[in-house]
Image 1 (cartoon, rainbow, N blue to C red):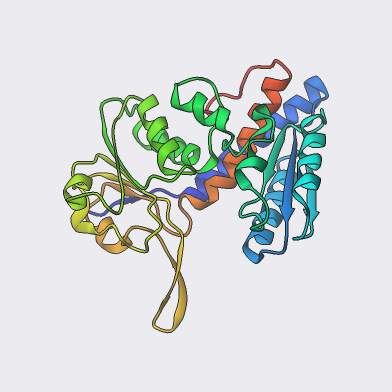
Image 2 (tube, helix red, strand yellow):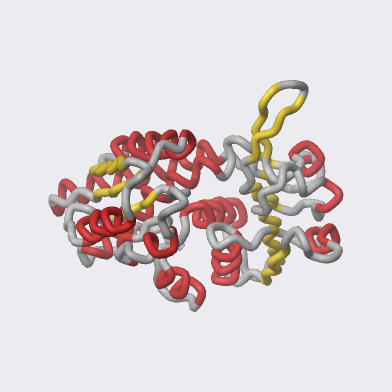
Length: 296
């Protein structure tokens, strides 16, 4: 068996295209332009790259991009004041504070100061609670992207056995909630799960989000299963830097029915879903129908 490769790069391009179409229609019909504000505190190199990519993608789909770059020594009071202003700005429909923040800042306090309706990362405690109880919420971007790809590949997910390896608040837990919402039977596993291989081999859908390079190997995959690899790990191999996932790709691809590669799988979907969430937030703020196919 040779697994079908789920091309996240192509899928994300399609999502961005859909978002751009909705944005153009909002502008033409309603005179409304969705706006995304991104706040970066400090000089973390990876964060600077992410923010640059988010800005470019936001402009590409026709949205307004509001960047706020603050020095690393920015006080908590000043950052909270900025978020308060963005909460009250009608041109801003989505607010994202780039993580990680400098150590002197309380990340939970900062995230929970964002208006939940503008929390396009889906990290505010109100959105976490709404998602957990099956109500309308802003959904974290990476799990939303995974769900979109799974729906596209399978159609209905009802009745499928899903195993999520990883229990983070950013991916593992919300991913499990989304799969439950689509009527999967869900198991959350992690690095300390007993007989992890046997748990994984029961999965029709296996989502790896544990943050350990190539931890999931082919002998842990049920033949024909769909494997979604959320991991992005930088390792050295043969003296060269390389990106690998949480799944050992070659051995898993020999067993699985479908698999996401790293890079080019889940990664591109995160920014695409950030744009989709900003569009959704804009529609909700203006009492307009939400875009179909771009929400959970």
